[in-house]
Image (cartoon, rainbow, N blue to C red; front, side, top):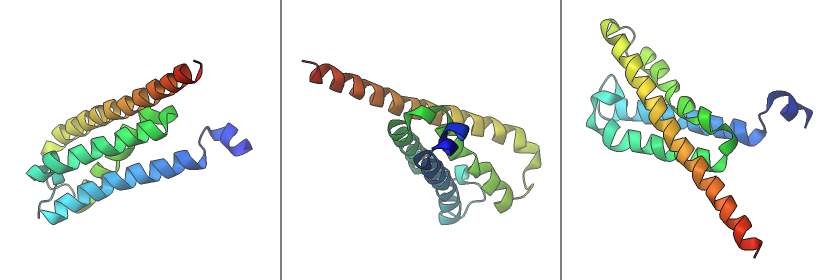
Length: 134
């Protein structure tokens, strides 16, 4: 218990972080390797499958662990540029600014999804309290 008070993270938060980050890595690497591209967003599958999966994962994370909703968007996206730099090191160095911009856009979009999960959790808690007080 003292560890939780010191860090603010419990085992469920850490497990959620690992699952969310791992999901982002699997989505990026899976699409890149599965479709034979150096960067996952070079495939239409990233936008039709990968990004919706990222939104689903962060929405669920925001629902299950609402106290850290603001971190789940970053957690799912952060492993992706790391994987990209390993899979295609400096191959498109002049385009790195655009890549950073798009990764930041993905962080914002996924954080909004996580916030939506947070809102659903708060509204459901509110509804349960209202119904149980009657």
